[in-house]
Image (cartoon, rainbow, N blue to C red; front, side):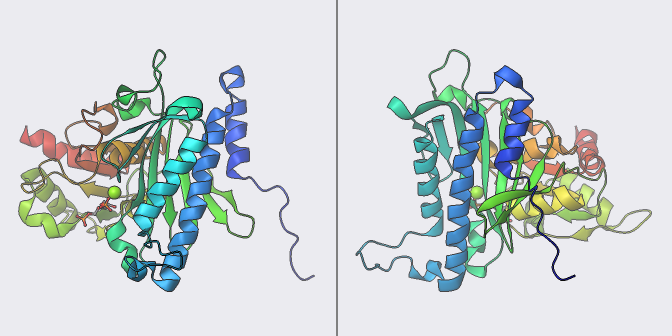
Length: 336
Ligand code: AHM
Ligand code: MG
């Protein structure tokens, strides 16, 4: 009677990834696992600081000086700094691209490794003050065979990424990731300080009932988007879709992966390439979506096939349930 004995066979993220790599035999060096360990550390650091910020409203303290006389850093700056320092120190990275930094960092000297990490350290920052979910998004490339690690190693299609994922700082801290063999979700057990496998093999339902888009931009939409939205809001048969929009990509995509439906950030008459960044927002989320059995497109082409020209370029995004995304593509094809 009383409490159930705890499960002693817990699957931590590290155990899970090692097991995955194990199947690759001699191909696996353990380097990716070590790199992912660094990402777990930064995620725990950011999660802790997001939580603290909610408690003491770090946002309000920003700009004030602390006891050491240093300026208190804003959460997004803090998150960027921890990621850069930990990824560099891991010894596994060659190129780092962050939304917070104008230029890519080329890691030199004894810390240089073979992976490139592109990331948005704290996405959805307009939501921080309200305590709404925010997240970290990352994508990982292996440097090209003859490269020592240069910009061209990250100006490659998203389909060439070896891993991608996000961390969501919400009521719990969730890390969702793919190394190219499906998508798995882990939840941070704060008492253990470990990410535990809680959502194995996430599959997006082939059709959903939810659409997610900033309809405040409706005045600027192009016709295919307007027509598609009308088709799900005023369907000839069946029920209209429900609207859900958090305005935090990680949270909106997380819900889409779990419940199905469609997430959209299209290009429009005001934002000619949309808003979201190709390298460290669209690519990782498109990678995860495809790995979960969904579709990710600009409306005109597969997102993962885009060849980036610059590290901060933007691209239109439609992603989610296969049939829902195919529906929107039909409106683009009808237009052409
Ligand atoms: P950010 O990188 O400045 O935080 O902006 C990215 C965020 C995404 O998380 C979200 O999907 C989108 O911006 C929401 O944009 P909008 O407020 O225009 O709807
Ligand atoms: Mg962002």
